[in-house]
Image: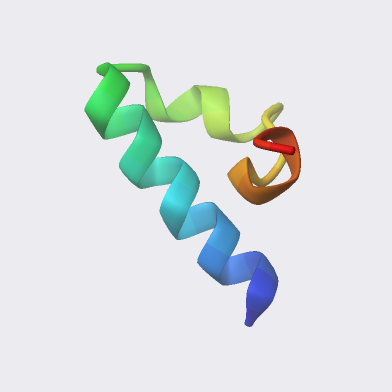
Length: 35
């Protein structure tokens, strides 16, 4: 559940930053990168 939640949050971040969804695949969960 935690992993899926991270993916959804990453998708939200990408939409906010107008980044391509493809960036999600080589991007760590936002919760980890935010530290």
